[in-house]
Image (cartoon, rainbow, N blue to C red; front, side, top):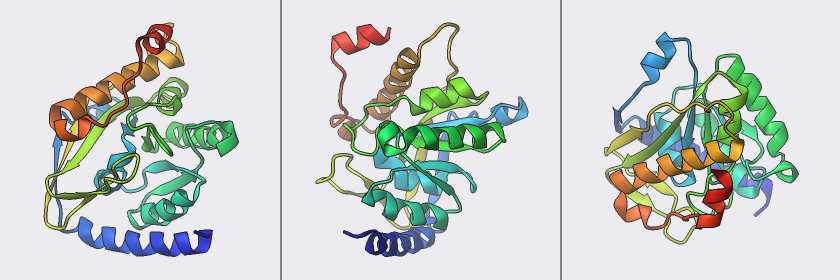
Length: 228
């Protein structure tokens, strides 16, 4: 698929999502955003790639979102613009995908007071495996990391994709479940903070969407011990 065709698909899907968004009913649980704002603390959403569509509908307008430089990213970028967000092209997967440059842009935006969001297991998974971008944002800014799962009551799931991407159906309820705000601990490594974010996201999906949580990738014991 060439980039121009992918962009046209993204615009079409974005328009459809914008129209669908007005029909949805959003409910937020354990929502600490107002308290954080009152304390002058920003926030960074950490969510699964599968929840990217519903999450973009639920997030504040103007949220900065990291988007892959892949062809999939060509679809997602215009979609995010339709939702009023700012896509930053790169990937949490590493420098060769523009990840470092994109992360630096996001750090700058967050330090300017913007809200940011990361699909922590993108762009290619495995599903639920958190990369270091969210932890780095939490360490390089004063913002708190907010793990979140965003679950439409009625949805279409792309079961053939690695992330099992979800699309809310019109006129449904969408529940956003937040973990408590997370900040790096004194002396904590990026790897250890990343593992804490991953553990909390897994807990949220296991609690509120157990059928989908069966598809989460679980780290083996040596990996967890190295991050501890």
